[in-house]
Image 1 (cartoon, helix red, strand yellow):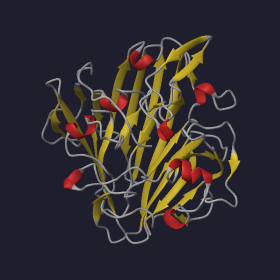
Image 2 (cartoon, helix red, strand yellow):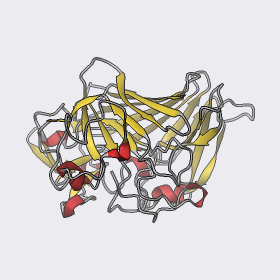
Image 3 (tube, helix red, strand yellow):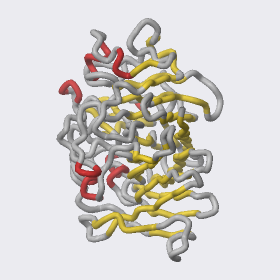
Image 4 (cartoon, one colour):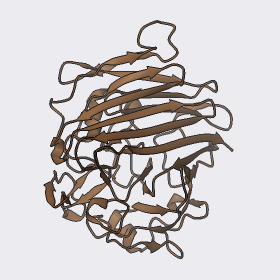
Length: 381
């Protein structure tokens, strides 16, 4: 889901601090290094998680962002499989389509930038306009991806936890929200992203992880040959503004059917209403109901043999095929990210859930704890 209009963050970010067992000594298991300067005069940090297999994840306190992830192929060769930038400047720019970000308060779209909670209407920024229809996207002009989080590394669990306190009224949302994002890299080649949050007043919430994947390790290649499987028999049709209509449509007999392994590019050009509205794949699929964390998607690059399995406890997954990447964004290594050179697989609550009574509730109240677990499990075949 691309950013079509956003404000450059120019201040108001809370000061970042770094704590934990790895913040000091040179023999630390989790190195903490400077990522780059911020407009505020401070600096962003990078935390590097490594496992026994050589996998390496770099995460930043700017946006609780996954900056890079090096994964072995079937020959054991490591390569970064994510799109992103080499400095904070890129992540703060209006051109950043949420590379690797932890987005919020509400990931995905909210119709007209409005919702009603307990009889009161709240107005949010309309910072996205697919089909020339304005809506609210990924938390607004300065969402969670553009603020500084407080990072704390834990050597014992090979994890980093980022904390951010979003004040009442920030980007129009009610309630002071305390959010935590924990990245953990295991020796089973799993990168776990776990979000929790509490609030002091009723609010709506949908924290989402938004990495762009190209499992080939070559960011200049198309992901249309990647093989995708989704554990979903239904998807959410949208209107021209990419807002769900409220219907759950079966995927059977349509190009939205990924119940069996299918190359992403096989049917993306078919004459099908959903694909025309989204410029390709940019929709939420309804995951098969099951308790707890379960498999949501499997993505494979046939050439490198890299496989990504995504597991979650959320009811939907947004599959976005990189339709709006157009070569204008320059990323890591000076690469200009071209059309469909990466895809996103974002586990989540349903888009526009605050305005759709039939959708799973997105309301968080005082005394409750929001949780969202997303596991990225890598292997090679």
